[in-house]
Length: 407
Image (tube, rainbow, N blue to C red; front, top):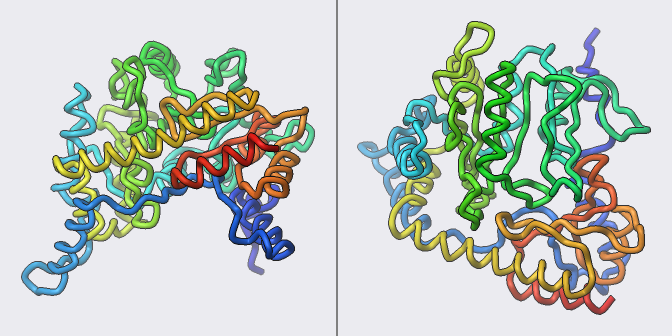
């Protein structure tokens, strides 16, 4: 008789953003007069079009696919050398990081990689995550069977080490004091809180991981939004990171590839655990379960690193960060307790009048026709908080803040 993976049954409800989409759809159907006035500052999806340099690269590579002599089929396992070399040079070597092209694995996005990376580690590994946390880190480990049951009282999973990120610690996790984890998920600049970590503080995590044999899975999807000098763009800026860290990167937020799909994972060859090179395990997994990002998309990724691409994307990021400042300043002026928005396109605010996160979600939707993300969807310590994104249009962002101010 067929059985199912019962670990999936541990997960409460559906994915966070699926729940939000269903609630918004139901609201619009029940209130058709407001259907066109709803402004979404919820999901972290970009709204600005692809930069001209990227569009040019797409057109050129599409034309190549029309001729036998320039047609491309399956991509190389790690990704095309032209893209991996551009990544290594611009994202790492230019910042003094010792990362080579053959340590970079091109994929269809950081979400996929952050979910897939756990497959190469044993099920007996203890996982540590920030709380609040990007749900994919936890849910994929639940699906794999690396956790216990969902604890309704604590609103988290048994068998997982949760590192509370609270207002009094600057929404930064503290190194676990009672139990040493095996796999540590870190995301900086952080989703959902928008918080950033200094190089000195990140070095403490690297030293801790090397001392205790942990592996840090470092999500740097928002590094392009860093504005402060002492905030590292990569964990490999820290001494010793090559022997303890895997880094995930995305083209979604820095270049608007949310619908195009492109990302990469860096696995240094010096990272060895249980007598095995982690690089070789990920290469085996990658080659077996993934057929590579399309040639035309990888050419578009290469254009991100061209002089024109860099200049155009710098303007685009500035556009979103102007939105972030608008939200941050507007909510502060309206009396909200807010953080983030300086090194990340997310604003993390405390819900007013002791509302729960979902109560504030309903309140904003019904009274101001604005969609955000309830903090409790990111974990127990997200309760009482709310996330807004800066990825909307500037006009919609201004309108949304005015509506909130007038509540």
